[in-house]
Image (cartoon, rainbow, N blue to C red; front, side, top):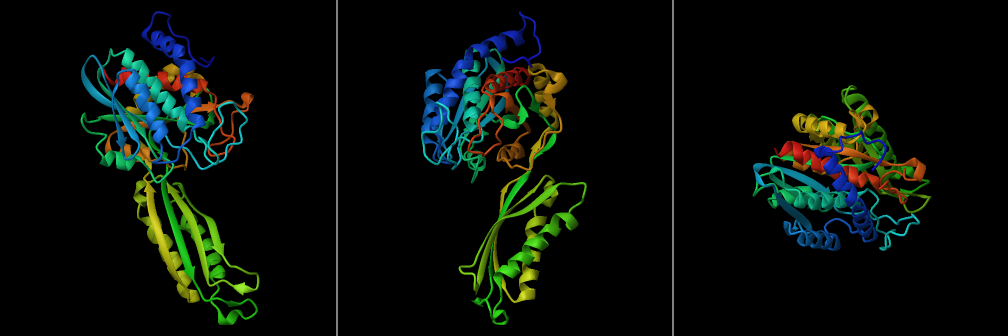
Length: 403
């Protein structure tokens, strides 16, 4: 695989797992590249789901399709009774025009796997294939291929459809190929790993008029500017400075002409935080600020505030298990990053609200090969060596959990 793997005894179980997965590496790359060429947006992953189902059928793996529109769930039983472990992989792509000049570039204009979900599916398929041929474990592994992680979120409807039941999942694991970490490393953290994701859209209604006669108007742009400035005090003055949060207004639309005072302005933004205790705070505080500023100027407003994803919180015991595996799979002196956190959001958080689990980052960047562009960039790509590392990590987690 790669030089960052620690040495294992030639006759050990770890060596047998690694050799088996190494032989699967070319197939992992082929699956990933086939999926990369046919990206699909959330809840429209029909081709992706059919591809997954075809592979599972070929290997004789029991599975269900059409869950929450396009989700697929595979069930692999070990050779004796035991616990049930869930493994999750997201499937959807992004509305981005790919700029990579590679043989496997997207064949669908305006769509691209720019976040590594094609790799997640390939890793999950590799895990399913390996486990279907090596069933010497206790219990059951349930592999959940989930639609629409990028929005509006497929985890919650899959949970509502019963994917954690029959058999009941006792713990969950998942990974994200991560170009913020180099190949041969893993980010494994107990507690808050990824942030809550909340969105807001606000329309401020003023009174339009001539740009040279402002006293006859209520300038929605001026009101919006004061709202945006005031929102920056939410984190600076209302949040414990030892905690992290972000309030960002990313879009502002107003006006039609340079000499016309706009009667209406629309702004949209996002809120991120780790502490679950702030679940209601930001919505309430943001509305207080908008209402106060509008009242002081004689404007009105409409606010649409949405709680998209909760914080992703890793369970201590399951994270310890994943960390112990990571220390075996990559070189421990540099390979396991304990404080890896991001304000990015993930709907894997909904699964981890239901059962204990761990979501971790698998380093996939390789600057020497030009594979270090960030996620959601039109030239995003990753070192495919990471695929085999991901399969080995999942398989070894099954080996440790399903005893």
